Length: 175
Ligand code: FES
Image 1 (spheres, rainbow, N blue to C red):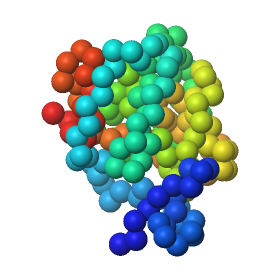
Image 2: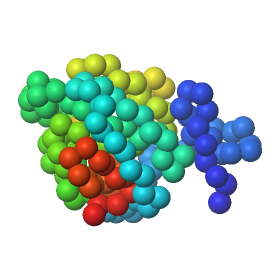
Image 3: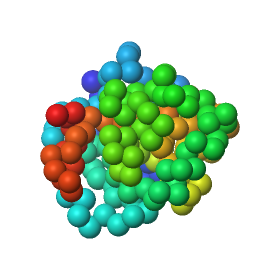
C-alpha cells in the first residue's frame, strides 16, 4: 500500500507521487466505530499544558491534538447539539470511553486526530468557536463534533489513549 503523508496545507498525499489523495469521501472510513487508531504507545506529560492551550503531537504520521478545555467551553457543548451531524457520536470513530458529550475520558482533556473527516485537511482552532477546516469549511465544536454545515460526514476521530497518572497521558492504548 502506498504510504500517506501530509502536505503543507495538511492535505493527505500519496508519498512519492506528489498526488493528493482524492475520492476519499471519508478518508478515515472505518468499517466499525471500534476501528479507532491504536498502537505505537506514546507517553505525554500534561504538566505544562495550560487551560485553553492546544498541544499538537506527531503520532503514526498523523497530527494528534491534546486540548485542555475550560469549564465554560465544556458547559457550552450542550447548547448547539441540534446543529450537529452526529451529536451522540453514534456514527463516528472513538473508543467507547469517549462516546459522551465531551468525547473524552476526562472532560477537560480533549484528544483527537487533527484531520478533517472529509478529505483529511488539518482544521484550525478558532478559540471558543471550535475548529474550522480551511479546505471546504467544515466546522467542528471543541469536542470534535461536526456541524451540519460543510461536507465532513463525521466527527473527528479519537485515538486510543488512557491516563497512567494525573498528568501522564498514554496515546495508543485504552489501558
Ligand atoms: S477536507 Fe474538505 S472540509 Fe475539510
